[in-house]
Length: 65
Image (cartoon, rainbow, N blue to C red):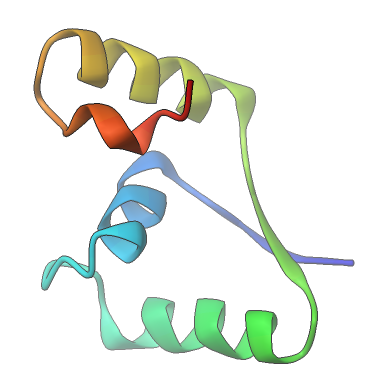
């Protein structure tokens, strides 16, 4: 079951333990994982991640090949 949908920044900040991620957001994602639920991201977020990777704005390992 999907517990929520993360926007682009939330997903990236969570994956990289960025301090800009709010405590509430991090706790929500952690609790969802502990409960066996997923967090979805939209297809436009995937496109944005590709764009940001191509422009070297985020590390290349964000977008798996």
